Length: 171
Image (tube, rainbow, N blue to C red):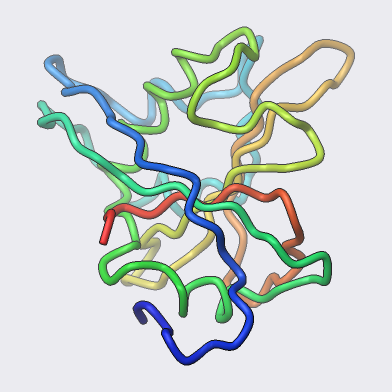
């Protein structure tokens, strides 16, 4: 995977870099990613949680953000062809970093994750046996507003304009 400079029409528009703060205390993904008020953890997310381990600390880090631009549905293959090399997250780091992002936007305030319920944030994460899966994060209303996290297989291809895509690398 990597940048596909020969593509006539681009699928992704860069929307900036995100600086993720350092993690200075241990993070346990199994303790954070439990369904509770404000967070719905779908069964599919077990694909990521089953391989994510506790993280002791992480340095600050920059990641890249993109928006899908075509109006027609695009596939993960098309998206990943335009993402930078190394765009797939390690599951432990993904859980720690995205838990922090969710906490910083707990009440649906603006931030690095989309809070438009029609436009989720997706990223790619290594799941069981190193298989790449899609992490799907969305802010939805189920009688009250809450974050919903899920994991989908790469065969899912229902992405459209306005969906935000995050890459573990910036170039």
